Length: 586
Image (cartoon, rainbow, N blue to C red):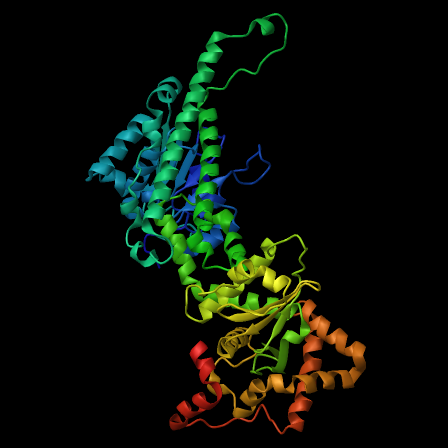
């Protein structure tokens, strides 16, 4: 447990919120959010008819970010001491670590342009001002605020962690002189604490070189910083123009009764809100640049890209700094295994979903926690995909079709341990489109021979490597629990029926037809492919196909539940004869 983490009791949180004199909470920053206890004590927001004002937060423990977002908070950073964009906030409220509370309050004061600060700090920070920071905080309180000491505030019944320490409730109010600040040194204050790309990157750079070039990341941050400075200058210039326009008064038409123009706004509130709105838009564009960079998209399938982008609303709330970019990329790398498995499953589903004869079936693995259902394998000799109809005047496939082919290449390159194929499917269709569309020729890419049938709009794929197809089948089978988690858990009968699934396919399908006729066959197979995997209809279809497979295997003398006792000396032989490739893929 973090010895400096003391969640804020409810009564103490409400007491701190009550310190604020300005009750118009336009935008609030909580620099040390923890579990969100202090934010949850926020007062009712009458203007927005909600129980909480808009709150952004920083939290150094990233495991807490999910919970904070569930509470409706915007996570905009991790380490507040590296935060640099607080000028847009009207209030800062914080319960920082007790050991360095003074430093956190001073950081908030330096970053804030116009607003109020409420903080819970250890009373000893003010009673024993031995450091420069503590003495500076005392001077600020004397000039711009007030303090209230509270005994045993963390000894109340609802305190998650109790401590007898006395605390100080610090209140500070920082006022911007509208004329002097907007038309004077505003830019200097807003640009305070800007750090270099090198210092922000810390130890993340080297590990991430495979994802994006360092100079690309650093140049993107520099471009963003330049855009922010220029934007702030534009807002200040606009406020200045509004100020002098208001001084000039009304036009002749207005004086003669031609209507009234709304007076231009030159207030502090206008400047803060305008900067905040434009700043968020710039952040959105900057994060989109990273997310859509070729170095990221080239490694993700279209479906995987969409899954990453589904979290974009949370990603784009973070400050656009080198450290946060590397943190985001670290998250992608940390989840690389899951992302890659997701990509494999996407391609598997694409192939299996649109043509029922692209797959063959086997009896899935049965564990103590899982009811046996039928497993699926893609055919290693040929599969067919529809939806590629072309017109006579086109000289290439449509964009969606090219994206699907690119996804195939990404996944099979990944399985093959390569960054990209030497000859991609997209390049084959771009280079040999006339031969494919009009000549009916069979053309080779790195992983497939392909033949296009433009009239019916299908492409026939002939895998060039059964080994790669088998790796895909085994990885997806293991992920979906059709195959055992450990290769040695199943006996030779299980692996025999798995390896012979293509050989038994025709007999299996005939067995399903024999059990209920053609309509029964169609209903069960179409339900299996087009219903949700866990729907009652799909499970019923899986059971029916599994039962048919059991009868086929029985006729061939295969008992898939027959186990063998594996001796240490037999392990290598078993893997080499039955499941060597699965072990390699896993």
